Image (tube, rainbow, N blue to C red; front, side, top):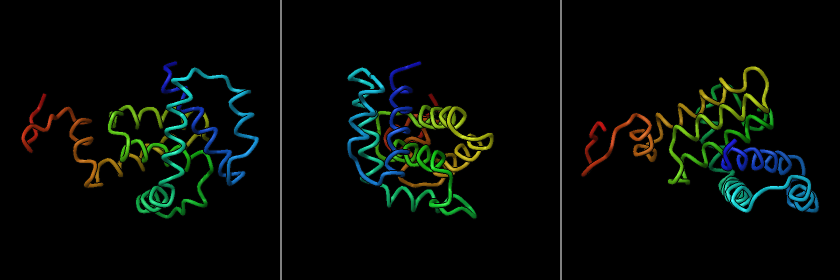
Length: 155
């Protein structure tokens, strides 16, 4: 298991706890004591968690836009936090390729969600990636197209 995959798992577990507790506290310190991680894993997990918490309202609005007949608040906690982290990565983590983000989110949903979670997560992230104008570069990268001088070049 790669360090970023491990970090995403830890980030999901922390985001889950935030949904329950609402704020940091002793539970967060205990989490890192009970779940040892390398500095690299901890740094990526904390970067992801901080970003999701900072952009939570925007993330939930965007997820809600593409989650037909679903309110984000009514989604299973695991699913909504996988989606929040995935959408955050797509929009604000330029160093992470879109394919990696989507594949990692699907794997997390398979590991932590119910039988339908991976399909649900894939469907929402696919729509966000395919329809959000700000993701044109990541969309092109995912399709194997390089953007050169404003034009797409297969490569």
